[in-house]
Image (spheres, helix red, strand yellow):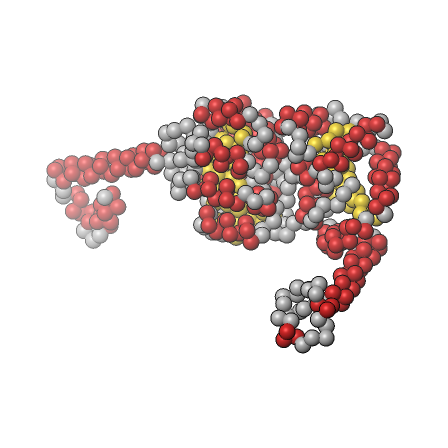
Length: 510
């Protein structure tokens, strides 16, 4: 209405007509203005009532010259896909965060945002769906929890007892790590949070959910249990985070993730974080995120931290334990902080930890068969320095955020190079230097090629023995093909019966 009035005013003779309006006309115009103001106030109240996520870019950092932004993104190898991409937060002090967020960061001794935080925060606060591809140990937890807190504080939620923010994590250890960060907000800002996962008391977790919480951090299996039994629901949840989405899909949690997302309102914001960008993660993003902004820090292919010195030791199987002892004595002579040792089996974790203790090394072990109380006790001992050596299976490969790990030893090489990268990534965090030792035997020949690729990408020295292992594996592989028969027309599959059919015509072999 006000717009039409202004437009008429600008027409020829419009100003003259205005001066000759009688008092009745002026009164009508004033009433129209009052109605317009009431309409605006009414719409604002409805927006809050229906919990529309306001464009929070009012908290964006002070404008930075585009040249400086481009330099920052190129320097940190940031690639961005999407529309309406806000500028990164290169400095917290110059940003227009709410005062309670600035105070929180100051009390935590926060100095400078990491790369994923700098670019992720303004995108999250703009209300857009977001996919972040970055290595572990890059500060992803705070990059989604900080906007989650602002989302809770600045918007009005629907009535009910369900959470307003949901964070899904693949393992208990990662869920507990996220909870530790969220607890800081709980103490300082009154944000209620709950961490639910398998292996802990179900009734205690159910009572906590029913008492009412703002943030729920959960593993997919236990969350699904509570949703099916109607202990809680996600009807109020308008901010969802999938942390380490690639790992959750690898563990077979896709049905549980999809079921949880089906219960979330359509007016929601979804944040997805992953170390890699496989087709399964892309499919999940396309199905539930719609339009989104994707930020890649570095390559979408998983690569090892370049701050880690990777040492490869090759020996016979029977010499493996002696090689491990030699490495331990070498580390002891150089001085060390904390050592994390990986094996592939639960049974050998206990065996190796016992052997270390009998030889005077203060070691503890952790694996999936231990209770949650035992796992928490072991991790706390290692975290606070009451023991300096932790022996573990891959339960500690992700989600173990312990400062001061100077060395990682792979007594057994993992099944994939991705697991190897996550294992050694427990050291060299936050731009610190780290050292990794990996013991290989002839049983690891098939992984030699992928390991060489990881070493070369990280500019590490490739031992000649490792190259010999790769060559030996392919020679034996080719020998098997010739011995047992190989059928190139059947999608590179070989048949063990081919050796009996080498004199037959090909038409009888298909």
